Figure 1 (cartoon, rainbow, N blue to C red):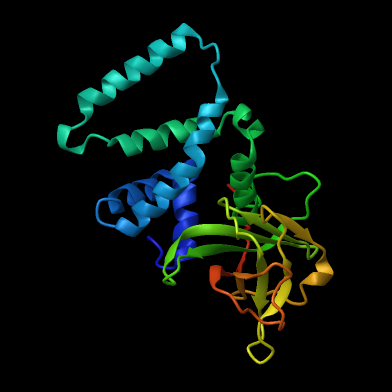
Figure 2 (spheres, rainbow, N blue to C red):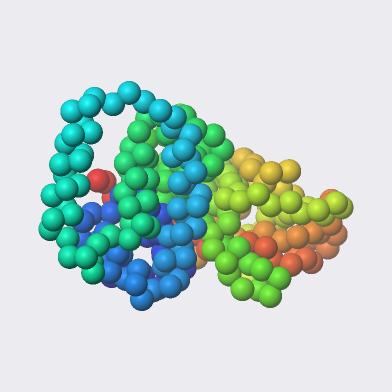
Length: 255
């Protein structure tokens, strides 16, 4: 079933683009694409993040016999497909990306790929190994908010490890401007209010020690606001919310 919560839909879209869904789930997503504009937009977001990375793979020598097998398989598929149900260019691109993602060369690409890998480690910790890293306990995919307060897709990843370490990973290039800064907050107690986890450095990526996060649980709110360069002067958010989302327990299922 296609989920309704934004964070769950982002996870589903990411898994779809990366080719991690089983055939039944893949078919359900593809059937929903024709009528679910929001899901299509989220899938488009992950395509834009990950497809450019496939171009970084470079050329590789391929066995001519392999090309022959590919051409034969395509010819067979063309014969069995009804013209009205032929896959769109978008689905073809998904297939190319799914194949590229399985290439070891892809994992040596640059910043965008590191971010994508971090998302996988956060939401699918038992599917992808991370030597030397404490397993993820919670993650939060923060949704971008425009000036009108409307969500416009995933923009930030917060990852909390089993040992309490907090990582902040931007999914987009965000520049607060001169004299301004991004500040990370969390809220687990309405009576106490938002608690600052600190002003983020240029670029937004940061690793915080366990003692910086006093509590963590399902549904805990995280947000990033636009503040003065030294941070909020009153210990509470004063600027516009740029990114917001809630913590979820990391997946534990195996392939």
